[in-house]
Amino acid sequence: MTVPGAPFTERTPRVVAARKLLRRSGRERAGRFLVEGAQAVGALLDVLDAPGPAPAPTVFELFVGESAASRSADLVARAGALGVPVNPVTDRAAAALSETVTPQGLVAVCGVLDVPLCTALAGSPRLVTVLVGTSDPGNAGTVIRVADAAGADAVVLAGDAGDPHNGKCVRSSAGSVFNLPIAVEREVPAALAQLRASGLRLVATSASGELDLHDPAADRVLAEPVAWLLGSEAHGLPTGLMAEADVRVRIPIHGRAESLNLATAAAVCVYATSRAQRPIRPGG
Image (cartoon, rainbow, N blue to C red):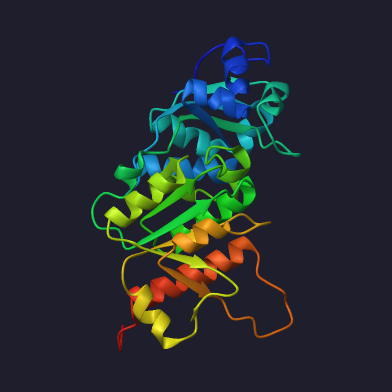
């Protein structure tokens, strides 16, 4: 469904309004965010075509730059077939909506994705990833992607954690922001209380943790419903929050590396949990 007429310019009111969504304050006021690039837009259309466990996002429109119209003709046609209004824009307007060095000329406007924590934890979650104070959007997006790949039930951004609708977070997630429930809870104590009320054991990573991730005893802990608490890249979890965890687990370092970065540590921990909760059956 392509809107007829001349391409929108960077001064067209619809483009001007969309540009405001590049800022977090604009996203919060409008309740909308931007999805940029062929990979992210393709993942978005996949969800519209076959909704998963996360609520299907509302897609208000797709801006298509002049140069992208032929390069991404299949995506544009698919969006129109799914009922998404397609707005041709000049390449200059498309660049104005982009956060990347090399704009791809495809930008969708969507309704925000985050849900209340009680909604994200509905049912009987067994694996939840909790980012506490993780302000870097690239790290947040990568951890969301890892959680999705490992089969987590939800991701929670607690405290001063990053915005899941930040463009870098959306791109780093490779579309995983659309695949599982994401909740934002600014009050960390409230988040911990709801996680516990949902039957989840709070597990934190710590270099001095009492339980080694490779110890067989760790499998018995991780086989139960757990929520992994992950801190910021620079500082990890605050001391007080570390003490709030039910179990502190250390990832063994066998070589000379001082530590693992956040995304790698998250991958090791959530996949260890997935393995403990989904044991490989003979012949399976």
